[in-house]
Length: 326
Image (cartoon, rainbow, N blue to C red; front, side, top):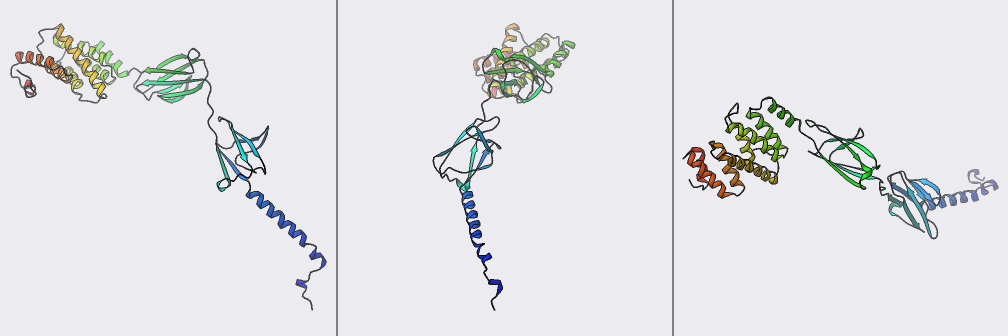
């Protein structure tokens, strides 16, 4: 008896061509997928154009042409347009093609904002832009308001007309120290206190305003030398010495040299204006400062003056060991 499970009637034989056709279509689809490229972009998504038509957005699959080249263009906000040519039969590693879009150049004015000291909060027309130094690109050529702010500093406001300059402009502001303003007021309230001059000069040195620091030190020292100070001048002379010998960090070698030069100018002025100074700290500071700046002969002359006034004084003995002749 014939097994009906394996019987092939006419209706079964008629299905065989359909199965064969289905397998052929699946194979063709698989082959077609194997010949596509996965087009990706950075940033993503980007619009993919073929001529005047958008054919998709990245990531998307692209079929290389059978002949010739396929020309595409990728566009994304804030980026330059990128033209892509895909030749016939193009093969990419792992079937993926990555296109990196370059950032578009911003039009307008580029403004570099700097401050002393750096790190100030910057506001442009009331909007926070970051901490200095800051470069702001793409500004419209118009009038703007900049505000620089920092803790313990006075805020600085600048009105800037960007239409009057070129495409690249810069602004640099100095934020005054509130501490300096505080000690200036203390001097106004107590003009004979040498401590206030010492404090103000100290902070001016930290601000690298060496010339102004020397002016302040001199005002206080004149009070001391004239006997008008409410207290002794030891603290004030000590601050001058700290600048000369750099007993606290206020900058690099250039700052140290500038500070010493300002102090030497101060000491020279005092000596020129007062020939008969009888203050040992004046001489020890003068000798150290002149010697540090390689004015050895001048330092030797001040040592000789000091030795004559204070022969064999213990504070002069270290200079003898350094080679100064009595």
